[in-house]
Image (tube, rainbow, N blue to C red; front, top):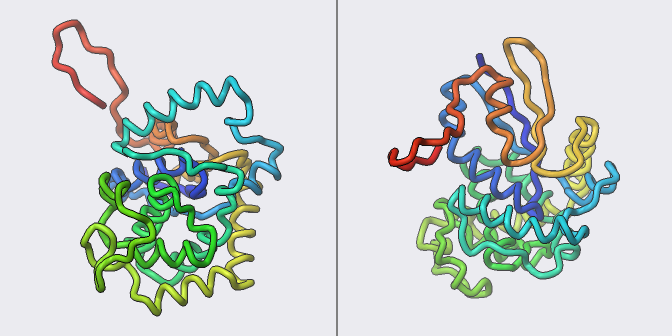
Length: 259
């Protein structure tokens, strides 16, 4: 038993957001099963271009179905006040925040890295202030706290400054002002441009055509396989030989439960 999961995600991908929330809920339990998970920022636009794929909302039939599927998927993980921030083609130019996340990943503890992902997703999908410019990235990082964003943050003006020493929501700031400056500067550097390019290329070499993309290695069999989407965890657990509970239909009158 045991293994490694490489998870490739982009801020512009709603189902990447859902996958992140799922990982946050199961990360400690996966560790108990000796399964490590590593999150890699990748540029979904480049993956689509490199694989020949197109965003699902370009096809009218898929776009119509997506409204139902995304609502159900968001509800399942407890995400609220989430919707597309206008023009997704423009908002999907997430190179700058993805490079910043590469920098944070190399310089900060895992807990800070995961919190940064949460708040940047929140800025993108709830506040509708995609952190794709230096100014908006600085704003999002300055407002980030060590705690998870709360549902009512959707009513907070993205441009309103947080109280000194506190992130949005009253928690301790995730980054001090000089750290924010260093992160934003690094996001524009050649080093982290290359880091994002290399990771995206690795995902493509591993067969990626969208996000979230998972590359899962079973440490016992030493075999690796790809998985796509935020609803394939039961297949991942099966591949890793982990115990899991399947969805089961209950008899009439039985107590309702969620699995």
